[in-house]
Amino acid sequence: MKKIVLFSLAFSALGTSQAWAANFAVITSPPTLLHFFILAAAVGCLIGSFKVLSLVKGGQLSKSWQIFMLGFIVLALCQLAILFRDFEIVGLPVFVIPAMLFLMSGLFLYGVFEAGRTLS
Image 1 (cartoon, rainbow, N blue to C red):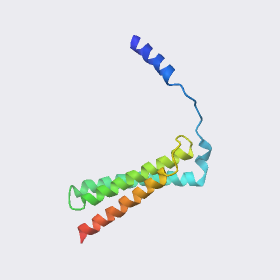
Image 2: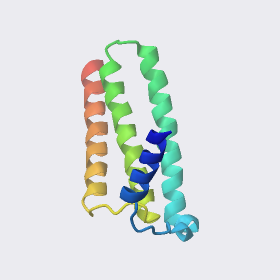
Image 3: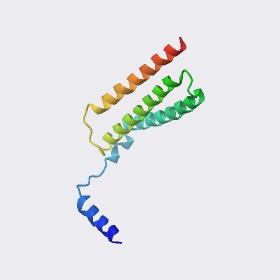
Image 4: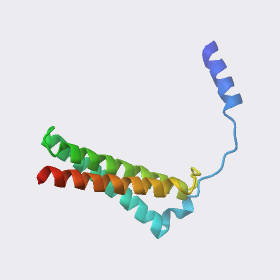
């Protein structure tokens, strides 16, 4: 009982900060809806690439599908970061999202290169 009281007092004292409401008015704007659809597509592609990766079972194309799956993970994280920025939940520096998009496109390019090298 003492631990619960001490924990709640410590949390009350240390966990106080300014609270700002998220900007939910941007949900209906077309770019935000497009980012939701891209996030849904990225999650669908991530699930599909995981199923393909389980089908190749460590074969020669396994490395390229792992890279594709990592690219879809980065794409989903990038879309989440964009949505968090749009809702004003998280303030990110301006270079983070373009850097993540660059990393994602680099991973896809490397995955295509690996698949082409494996198939030739």
